[in-house]
Image (cartoon, rainbow, N blue to C red):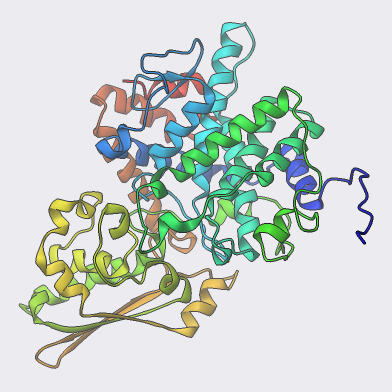
Length: 482
């Protein structure tokens, strides 16, 4: 005999109402968050400009129907595309994530909160152009920075205690949820519409992590976030048109997200939403490498110098031991053949072999031309990864949030070289050293596609927070048009 199932419409899950109320009502007062968001903006856009040098990325960009130009549409930086905000969000999102070089957040779940800029900038630029055309004040870059801070916070706070990767889901689910919430704010949706939109993001089928792991690692990991932030814009626009939501999408027994996709567990939270994530976000400054390897690559660069000083090369290495944290072992400890660039930039053995052999690690080093050097696989075969429990504890410690790696290189003559790096150059504890280098990284990326005069106009605004915040979004984006 079947039991009675109530059809009474439930209230929205608390997780959803908390996100909506934060996205629509929270006033960001942290000067540090806005300062960091401005750095995040230029670094993220710079990563997108560098990605335009790779045909594997550019072949996915542009309108769905070639030649389409949308009146008052979003301009895609570094291109001449003018697109609807949904497709523009995909374009911008794919560009900025393509080379795995934008910011990172590491916790129970890892991810890249600046991926949300795809949806934020697409919608803000479109609205700014429409407002200007209709005689209304255009949205400003201050509003973009505020949306960035809030998207970082939503994605990052959920990630602190909830591991989606352990149930096989990709972290871009959090990009979709965070982008949906803040895009609703930019679009001026009501609280009810915003709740509906966020619930739609959770009820979607979520991406599997299949494309990030052996034996299936592939290029989808480079456009998955663009897809997620684009979907967020689509859902927000549907909610604005009056599409209904699903209040208990997380908690409903059997059919809800918790039971279907999260092993029946409810989300846990370490802290309320504020501006913590943007203030503590990690920047990839020196190397386009999966973040759990950043300190290992930094250590490898130091050891390369020590090899040179001893008159040695990688041919003189007998064994390499990497002491690392558990998350690194789970994601990027990879043996066997590597079939494509996406495979290589998620292999810690590959990412330390390149600097030890060549004294560098660039995006081009993941391409087939470099990967064909037989010395790389020969050196990879000599590498062993082991967990250092203290590194794992410090990785999860909210007061430290370190990403430590230690390299021990044993040479054929019996001598040993060792180097440990606890905090990468992009860590909050190394901001003083890191931010000048981040600006130099941005300058290099601007020089890839813009004449010197255009570069100077962009830098003049981008490095002056007060000037940046006052500028209309469309005016700022226009500076990046080719």
